[in-house]
Every structure is written in structure tokens, then in C-alpha cells.
Amino acid sequence: MSDVFPQQPLYLVFGGELEDVSGVSFRDVQGLDLVGIFSDYDSARAAWRAKAQATVDDAHMRYFVVHLHKLLEPEAALAAG
Image (cartoon, rainbow, N blue to C red):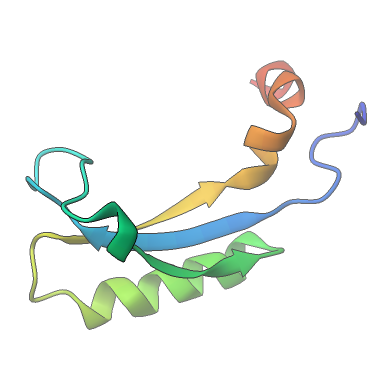
């Protein structure tokens, strides 16, 4: 692993229908919308925003940006704070 964090940033954008708007439990895990994996946060955020705005009328639909590089290099993420 690299001493420099992150070596290759990766961001996953996905979403789906929540069981309850106060939590993060999905109604249908197999039906999750996997929007894509992006190499920079700005692109991931733009994709997230487009999906979130397209489903704004459905309170149970939520989209998320996950920092995959932090999962791939957990020691570096902890060291970075």
C-alpha cells in the first residue's frame, strides 16, 4: 500500500428505495441503481446530483457517493483522519 492517500481515488454512486426515510435500509438490495464508478469527486457529485434531482418527488429514493478508495486502503484513511 502507498504512504500517500489516496493513490487512486474512486467514487461509487448508487441509490435505491429506502424502507424508511429516517434510516439507510434499502427496500430491494437487488434492485439498487448502480450509477457508476468515477475517478474524481466532482464527476461523482454531478452524477449523484442528477439522479437525486430526477427522483426528488419520491421521498424514499436516496442516492449516495461512497469513497471506495477509503475502503480499499483503510489504514491510509485512518491516518488521514
